[in-house]
Image (tube, rainbow, N blue to C red; front, side):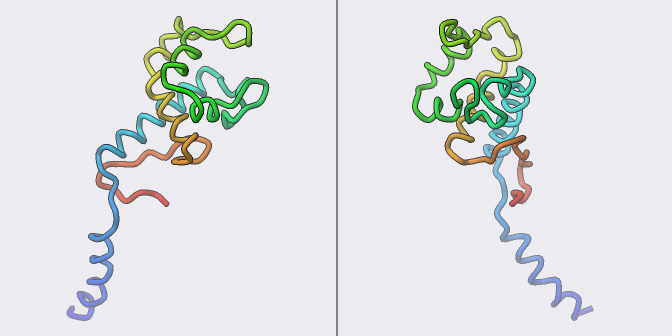
Length: 129
């Protein structure tokens, strides 16, 4: 019995000392996932590329790095007919998830997350590496 305790003690210490995801990070990861889902539902990749880094239309990642939040909101909601960008103000999903879309794209633009569906972090759980 003493041998088992001695063998498990280092493992228990690692588990206790392992970094955890706080509630704010868990909330942020859920928001980024909602943003990714909205982008996929609206098929933004059709013009902006599979990873939103440009294709027939400009890179959304570069636009977020180089522009303001106000500019992002204007382009998404009101569009720009001359450049071929439709406005999405009439789309309830886009309006409801605008903050989440911005959060996902900003995290991608900063390099905080990789392309594709963001991994959801659970509060108190060890982050996936």
